[in-house]
Image 1 (tube, rainbow, N blue to C red):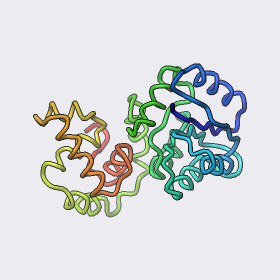
Image 2 (image 1 turned 30 degrees about the horizontal axis):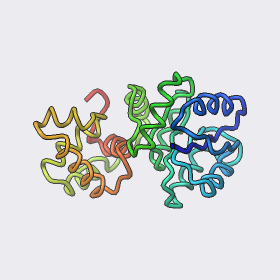
Image 3 (image 1 turned 60 degrees about the horizontal axis):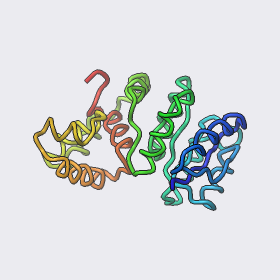
Length: 221
């Protein structure tokens, strides 16, 4: 059973999410919070598998709450709920350790898939909204020292790991990477685990963020 905590300051949205989630036999909504502070407290108390986190809320916002949850070392995964006019906040949330983001108007099937994906330990990089998000943010990112950061990152990896990291950072699945590099999926999985460990990354979303920040991947590449 996947335990979910809903954090959103709009009660009608919380109710809507609850109705969708509780109709599923493998998902249990363990609580609701109306702001980030309450969300952090309830995460500590309830230990949900997934936290659906709104971004803009009174008091502690979703970004601060995501950082606070990550700082506790909790196993709960954060899935950020947003609209495109809040892209800059979403990027901050991904950097803070969220396992992905989802548009608030996403269809129910997409919401359910995202929750199950995050609960299973993977990151939500699809649909193409992730690429659009980073494309919009790239002009806002500082250029200073980007090449130095990129070189320092790559120096930690073997040649094979660099190849896998480049494809991982582009949002490709293990199966796609395996086919392109002529490796087994099991071998790719091992490489991905080593890359995340060497670069001290929590998941694939953070790999994408780091790759774009460092300049390893650029929009349109």
